[in-house]
Every structure is written in structure tokens, then in C-alpha cells.
Length: 443
Ligand code: SAH
Ligand code: F3S
Image (cartoon, rainbow, N blue to C red; front, side, top):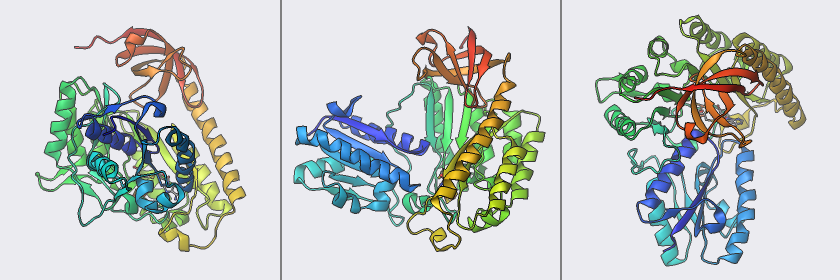
């Protein structure tokens, strides 16, 4: 059986964690992870299908990967994750060199699929189904970082935003028990992990009904008590499930990072209704007001879709004015992409592609200016950074503050994984630059 594998991950943080679970599954069966596809006997693409662009990117990549198969006849190529779930056997038609197809939540069976495919010489397919959900407890996980760890608290989504394909690809929401989550995090702390990212599609809708009604806020409070865990993040909370209790925990537990990613999608109540988001512009702004009025400065970022069907110029203007009101520290913005089997396909008022592009460019420029002004205020300040890695430029290090600012600075590689203080000397809309002052003594 082939020994060396390479996983390429597309998409969100959940996919990053799923890839770590797949790697765990393969490594515990004696396989070895390699750094480059050219060294691998097995190449897996862990894919995203949230926008059409993501899907086309994978098809293009499959075209490029074909060359390896020409050289190494026994190479096994697999497509896993959301796109595999959505496109299914269509992938085999377009890319006959693929022999493994598995939906998300199939991380624990990838090795057995590989074995079956190699033995039979035929493609093997395993998709998620709601009738037979896969286990939420997947061990072991082969983690890519020694200090930061993603932890699944729920899988799937019970909402039905009219543009979104995730409920179809990832299925109905399933909740992991709070005791299992806490046990996993205690183990991570014992291994030296300091930062935890809790993951779920609507992460704050979490409620463990089996074990004394543990709410998301209560879960955060318990995690904050685990010795060694210094930073707790979560993605992504859903605005309608944002509670006063959650804000209270964010304010009172300093281990919970003072940053929240709160996807708004649009600043127009009319469009929010068409998207079935379940809140109005005013209700969203009320949550933001509470966050801003709290005693702890909490930075806010968001996701925005432009060019949703029926979005008129004045709706788009509403989104721009919302950006001004909220003053987001960051925003991921996308052109609306029609997705299979979603309700938005039936809506009138399609926005032409050029107009979507124009709105996206205007919005991104607007947001860049906001971020420039926010980051400008950091000049001269001293911040605490958890050092992540060498920066892309490779001449400096990069890390993040609790409120999720990217900070680049010069320093020795031995600082990676440590908390350091940095004095900010320069800034851009997307990051800060500074000078390393000192390392925090770790217990
Ligand atoms: N609940 C998830 C959201 C998953 S999708 C979370 O935890 O973040 C991530 C983002 O992609 C959404 O917030 C939305 O802004 C964007 N998105 C989803 N479907 C889209 C579509 N059809 N077209 C464009 N953007 C989309
Ligand atoms: Fe998608 Fe809305 Fe759920 S964006 S993941 S259906 S909350």
C-alpha cells in the first residue's frame, strides 16, 4: 500500500481542521505526510464549494496534478470535502484520474477508502448522509501547529440562508458533548497548546442539552478555567444567537480573545430578508452597539456578499454606510455566486457580473480606508503578540494580537510559539509592523 501522502486544503478553518483529522487517520495507519505533491503516493484535495470560483479552482488544480499521474502510474488522487459532496460523480467524469471521493465528515474513513480503491483498482466513493451521521469524536488529529489548535464543537448548520450551500454539503447541525470538548482541550493544554479556536458553522448556537444545559458562553467560561489555555477564539458566531451572556464572558474572561467575527452579509434589511438572515440592519447594529459600549475594547470583523439578487444601488449604499457605522477591523467580501439547489436561484433581480465587480471594488476600497484609519491609531502602542511563523517575506516574524491584528517584526526564529511584546512602528490596512521588545516569561 502507498505510504506517502500530501493534502492540499482549500477553504475555511473547518477544512484546515478536517485535513488534520484526515492526516491523523492516515498517519495512525502507518502512512507518512510529505511536504510536496511530487513526493507523494497519494494526493488529496480537501475542497470548498461555497462559491463557484472555489469549485473551478479545484478542477484547475486537478488538471495540473494530472502530470504527476503521468509520471507515477500508481499515484492515487482523491477529492474530499464539500465540493466532493456537492459535485459527486461529476468529478470522475471531468477528472477520470480521480479515484477517491469523500464528503466532509468522512475524515475517519479515508484510509479504508484508499485501501479498497487500491485493492480493487476502481474509484471509491463515500458521502455524508444525515441518516447515518459520522462520529463527532475523531482521533487522532495530526496538528499543523504546536501552539494553536482548532476544536470542533458542532458540525453542520440548521439555518437556511437562501444563498448558502453549506447546509447541503455539511448537513444538519450536530453538537459535540461539552465534556468531550473540555477533555480534548485539557489534553491540548497538557501538550503545550496555548490558543484554542472553537469551530462550528453557527458556533454560538451551541447548547449541550444532555449535560446540564451548557450554553456557548458557559462553555467558554469553563475553557477559560483550563490552566495553560491563554487564548480562546471562535468562528463564526451567528448574529441572532449573540447573547448578553456571551458578551459578558468576552468582557470578563481575558483568555477569550477580544475579537469577534460577526458575519453581516448586507447592510440592507430588504436584502437581509431575501437572504433569510433573520435579523434587520437595526438589530445587527444594536449588537454592535452593545459590543462597543462594553468595558473591553473588542475588534469586529465580518463577511459581506455584494450583488445578491434584488440588490439595488441604495441597498449597496446601505452596506457602505453600515461599514462606516461599525468600523470593522476586517471584512471578507465576495460577489454573490449562485449555488446549486439554493433558494436564491429562484429570486428575481439578478445583478450583472460587471456591476457585482464594481460594487466589490468600491466596497473593498472603502473598507481599506477604514482599516487604514483604525490601524493608524496603533502607531507607538505596545501590543502582546503570539508569534506564529516566519512572515511571508521570510525576513521577519508574524503573529497576532488577542484582537486579531497581524503584527510583523524582526526577531529570532526561536520566538515562534511564544508570547512577545512589540512596539508598533508602522501600519497598513491589513497589518501592523513593529519592533520586538521582550518575551513574556512562560510558566
Ligand atoms: N457559517 C459559516 C459561513 C460559511 S460560508 C461560518 O462559520 O463562517 C462563509 C462565507 O461565505 C459566508 O459568511 C458568506 O459571506 C460567503 N458565502 C456563502 N455563500 C455564498 C455565495 N453563494 N456567494 C457568495 N458568498 C457566499
Ligand atoms: Fe450558510 Fe447561513 Fe449556515 S451562511 S453555513 S446557511 S448560517
